[in-house]
Amino acid sequence: MRSTASVLLRAGVVTPVALATLFCLAAPANATPVSVNWSCQGTVFGISQTSSMTTSVDGTAPSSAASGSAVAITLTPGVSSVPSSAAGLSVTNISNLKMTFPTPANSTLVSATVSGGTVAGTVATSGGNVVLTVPGPIAGGTTFTPPAVTINVTAGASGTPITSKYAGTSYANPGMTMTTKVSLVGNVATACYPSPSPTLTTTTVS
Image 1 (cartoon, rainbow, N blue to C red):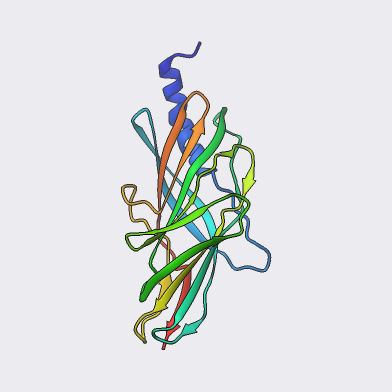
Image 2: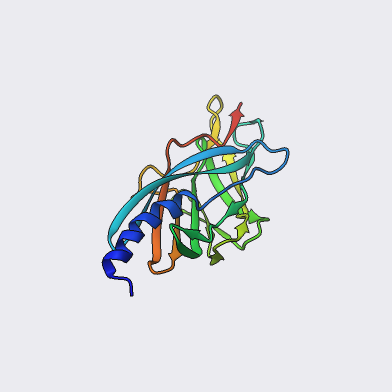
């Protein structure tokens, strides 16, 4: 029987490894995805572990728009793989995956919708943010594609572009969160923010 100390030691190893390898993203054919580097923190038994990982998203938006006109911005995450194990421990699943996008700069948020993907997801607007939620669970050792998010906005003042990004500036103010269930450890709450945060789409306003 493993001691608690042994489990804690292994948990300290599995957490950053699981987070760093959680998403292995492939770009859709003929697309130009944007790479996003994430700084992540997971907490196991009150002990925080940090790691980094890279995801991708394909953003589409009109190149230009008139001030006051309707603009649709679609952000499509890449294909993701959930590892089946990390540091010798099984990854059971991930759940409650949330990706947050602030209202694009120089625009007024109207609505948001989801489409496609291989897993069910919902979108909600709250506090000026658009939040994509994939409840899962998504089993370890499987691949999935999150739904695409279309953000409908009204273009702002001319001369300033509409730009979209992920939200998040710190572990306390993340742009992506999830729960990873690991054998012998249980649920690992994970918070990530983009570091740095790249521009996903740009629309010139005239």
